[in-house]
Image 1 (cartoon, rainbow, N blue to C red):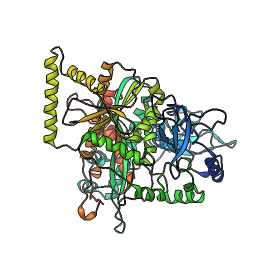
Image 2: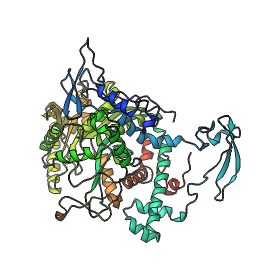
Image 3: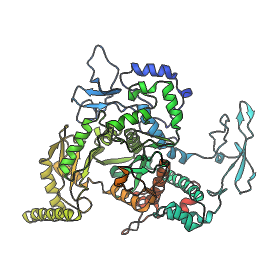
Image 4: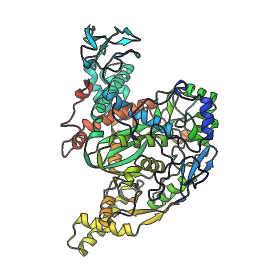
Length: 614
């Protein structure tokens, strides 16, 4: 692609087969046992102290030195779970497979790489295999057209010293070889307007399988369109972005009556709070993998016997690990008291053997039948490294994260150099979402009275300035919560969307002026990503919340829910493109892409459906 990956390395295919590994699996396993910490992979190294004010922040665990004091000790949190212990600040962090994180990043970057791919000779060993047909007559000759009107080419390259002479066609239209093209637009619009798949088939008078085929086509077109636009982002000069990050779970229906357990997958999304542009939404699921083949290979090489971060398949949920995690699951529930919920979240993460893990399956859940579920923390690391690549030219980045220790670790690891240079800041944002409408209104009235009191005492202040003054006071009186004594500030302004909000500055190096600190705290919000999550539920029937009944004892089933996680990712990709490029704001009549500078006007559904490249 020409671009460098998020940590300075060219994007390459991850090692996915034993034949591609420089060591045999037996040698690799032996080497892993001798390693103190997982080696860096393709420039990625996340095993270091995640405390921004520590001298070791960003300094990776190295080989043990016999004549010098090492900044870290390696201890065990549980069987097969090595942890780095920082001897400078006394904080610990679970070790992760850098190779596994790279594999997740490579999976996410794939669609951006495809944006720059042009048709070329399909023969692997041909000298023209990476030479696009646009290079001209010196490399290819026009060779007529196909029955559907697509241009054919004759390759003039060589294979092993002999002329290639391979002929191949390049589609002139996105709808080549497709039937019922006149229904594409209406099906596209129905998909993103909460019409169930069976109702789409009924409305359009087509077979159910045809609807799924159309979804596949629309998904390919959405990816092609978005990748062409978003491949420009790494070079776009943007002054500031305020990005909210959170996750949403999706329930997959069971498909067998003798096993009524659900599969639950999680997607992490990042939204610009200002433009409402959704930069990415990544599911912790890899559809390319065969679970039976992976499980068998892991068994053959005794991968399960290695410490977790040293495994070949470290990022993937293996069946035995899933069962063990299921037995140890300690999910906590919100109580409705914000300070208590924050403390409970800290307590819950502290009790886990790996503080960064948040996907804890229950007895009513199972792994997907096809494709493989990835550990959520590896998806988080990949997601933030993807954002690092995508937003390389942004002058200032402010991340507003849901209170999630895995999300914090991934963000600080991906942007550790930006945090040190003060280009990047990160905040926890916690909202009380358990309140009734009456409770929200009561807090809003109390907030208005407190702000009005400040304005009365300081006649020169407007409402915004009064809020900032209250924030300065509350920052000075921040509450220390949790084992790590994080400083939490409760925002004085209550709204219906965020009636009670608490904030924690994760990258506070003590160098901000009080007014600047208050201004940043005031910008901290999850409204961008939360509003998009609500839009997903409102516009995708397959992704609406399933209902649990008492007779199901925790299991859920919805007549509209999907039967495959792969279908979830396709629908999320489709709606993300519609959200960013098609749907206009009610006030400014602009799309998020227009506000960000990626589009000059609203994009029509037809522009996406018939997109063939730049």
